[in-house]
Length: 382
Ligand SMILES: *Cc1c(COP(=O)(O)O)cnc(C)c1O
Image (cartoon, rainbow, N blue to C red):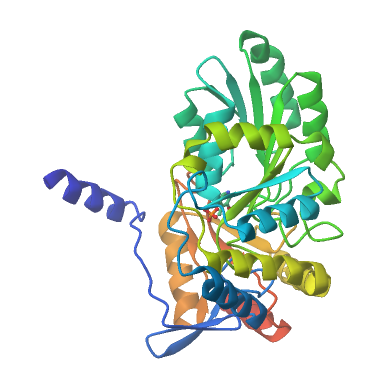
């Protein structure tokens, strides 16, 4: 057991030790921990749907109708009519032929990538892509080239040099990046993919619900959905619930149903979750516009205020990273904010590159201007 103690000690000296924090209650953008209340700037409940009664009501209805669990994987008896219904809604929402559910975004990425490419193949992945994407590539055994973040010139160089030596080629990017809050140049990437005979997988985990005319994401906003083989996203963030989806062609969906191990070998999502997801999609279509406009307005306000103070921010979305650099410093500032009633988690390596530790302010529909002004003033006072 000594190696475990050594590992933990080392983590601690480097300011990298991670600990769980228990939330006692949740209420409209605020949480309590123990008896104290905090503004929560670390949740991905961007549209504030998590506590919306429409979601819980539909979830409860589906649980009453179908039970607490599905008790089988999709290919056994775990495909209920509501799973199929939700997949159809997803296809329409994302403007693709076919929707397919996965139990989480993590499982979707490892399951898609390891089914689409193998040892003879190559993956070109943005350097800032999520851990689930990296793990998927590792699992696939394909050769991995990471291109500089959002740098289409670097991607093009790598494609020119290496694409010809492999059988299949897969390019992967997030559309809104989780830790930087910025946006991928999807149109340019689509062009490269077409010129270099590659597939494209786009992860819309942080864009679903927020961007696009119907709120389906950046692929919709940039009008490139048709050209992308697989668009994935999660129900666990702006949609306030849990689980994940992909939107793709009939053929690819059929292939994944037959080959994607994280899809095949896991009990399907429970009825409550499917009900909540159905209600969440409807909410996004009905009143999402108002919610995402407020959200993005507020994000612009806070980002501008931070920049006026000389802080180093990045991105252009509801995610506002403030780059601090030093691991221990970022923990100190996070603790200072916490002591003043603000929950803002410090993000450190390996989640982000070494030397770029940051505070990640994640805004939700529930944050009012007053709370944004409060946090601005607190940052001024540090
Ligand atoms: C959160 C996230 C995932 C994982 O989704 P879960 O549903 O939480 O498992 C995948 N990709 C990105 C970019 C994410 O931010």
